[in-house]
Length: 101
Image (cartoon, helix red, strand yellow):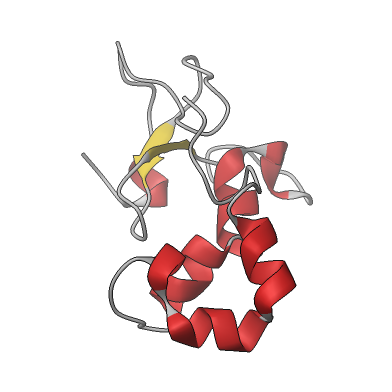
């Protein structure tokens, strides 16, 4: 298991928990400990189009982790207050926050 983006590689039998792809380099997310497509192995202005970039840029999950909040993001009053009730509730259905596979 690695969190190091530069050591990402395909892992037989594992797949991205966000998109289901099993043929791309994977790393574990620091925030929710899920296998995720790693974008660092590819050179792209848009981050390679892989799940890691989107999760780290657009998810409450990573925001919660990065700001050092405790507990689960789904139960975090600080995140709820910062985002507002409507955006916080919408995050529960956002594919950038919740693993689908």
